[in-house]
Image 1 (cartoon, rainbow, N blue to C red):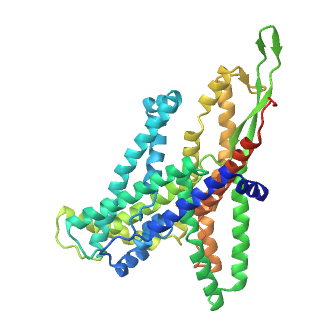
Image 2 (image 1 turned 30 degrees about the horizontal axis):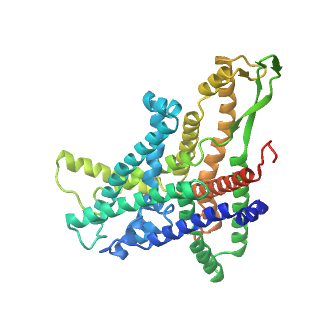
Image 3 (image 1 turned 45 degrees about the horizontal axis):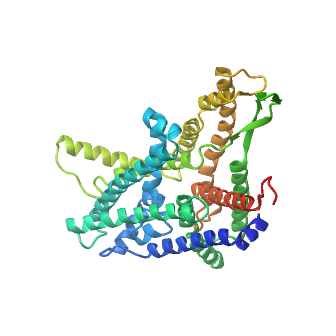
Length: 440
């Protein structure tokens, strides 16, 4: 790997692409410090400490949410829009036809739909955030014009990151949106290291616990690498072909079924479902006494009682929370894996090309065989992702390491994006060194 990175730096074209990626990172860091005006930072920090939902948004933004800059929402609306469009492609036959048979033009249309949906989702999210901040006393200026300005600024920040990600994909190396998420997570690590070092120096953190924590973290990272690289290779035999007067024997190949088809999406879905109701309930009657006997008042009192119950029994440190978290990750892993890999399409493509799995008849038997294999590998991946989701929190509480946040989502994203970027660098090096069959 290091040899490939060294070779990539020596190639002018690849070096320019790598430099462009770092230039885009510099712009991202600069935008973090472009803050919204008229913000009460003390009140905003209190809101951040009381809301786990904002912490979920903040860990992807590289500190932009904590500073309340114009890119406080990060690239999250674009990610949500991409996921929704991917789900709609499976549900709506028109979009599915456009994705499969539309070619480059169809992909451009779907990308355009994703951009428009990003604007809608970003506007909705920014509106809810601005109204919630105004009610919490975060803004000094509470006029409607300032709220509209704050909403417009945050939406523009998200659109800038979306454009920056597309530029990285075109002129850099790797997936631009993934790299923006990657740098947003990595930017938090120096702060974690500094805080952990200070805590260990002052004696607040046991050195033995810190060593055990680092060792387990390295084991987790290695296991994630195996999870991303792992695949089940289903053998495929090509049929014999007759070209002119010659007969060519069929060649053997395989179908690579990835161990983790859901990626990090299942954990993100699970966290969103767990945190969104709590955040929504916290907005109703925050510290206010509800009087009256009407139906609306009784409804608000019920919401307050339910919110109080959640705060007591359904906390991230509780057993019930972690059990539900584990089950949600398992369910969403199966759900998203079935969407990403359509075994019916794989079987149809094999039949059209005259290929077959040895010992398995084409058609429905091939679909059943692939579903059986997919169920086995998805079960292993779902259990692993469920354990990975709840393990970091238990590890931090057990070893009292509270200054270094080792989130399962962040680890999966960082390792996955790093592996994908290295793979693309190796592919570009292979394309450059390939000379073909014609020699001059």
